[in-house]
Picture (cartoon, rainbow, N blue to C red):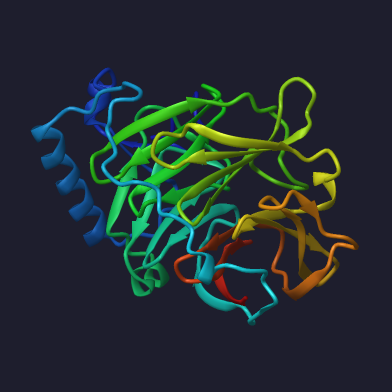
Length: 316
């Protein structure tokens, strides 16, 4: 059953139970899950609902993991990239993929309530999630989400103008307001906000209200408190299709007819702009990538590109 008010939302429940939100499990329309896996997920969901009710409240959790400090020995300029290594295919051409070490978080389309968690590459390839997390407070908007500390899924909700950190093991959320314009962050993007995890630090790229200037906010992954911010008036986001931050440096993705092109733009540590926009490398494009994320634990760039999920190793 698809709700009239929300697109891409499927509800598994009795019609008579429409007023009881706590008994609802949301699944995407084209979720690639076997009947056996779906039954197991539903049974686990039902048992968990009996044990406790999830509360629609903000700022209700205390995080016991501090943000991981950046190891300078593991950081540097990206000097070269490998060829893409294809990991999985999906039916939906628009989606998000976030990697944190061995863990993966996948979202389908550009808005919804469900986050698919995978704990190894085999499950990701077979589309066999270890868990399906339902976001009860607010739906995610966009494909450029993030993960921090291994078990926190970070996303933006335009309906509330807040950033949310959803702790998947405790099913609780913390939020912080952000004044982002409702315009695409990049050319052809499905996101208003780009969220990046760089060594345990949360970076947020967005166009501010009301001037629509590109801003970058550095925040604590656990508390979501802002540490520092930048205004990047020099960067025209209409010329790029995505971006990521690695070792305090901003990298952008542009395109030609056949390829995605990786450039380095800005160093937040020294507040220096790279001259002549050095090109690091390029690779074959399948379409317009809806997610490009850097994972500092594996030193890989991970991409959701027109239904193809692939990984690129970097050399620093």
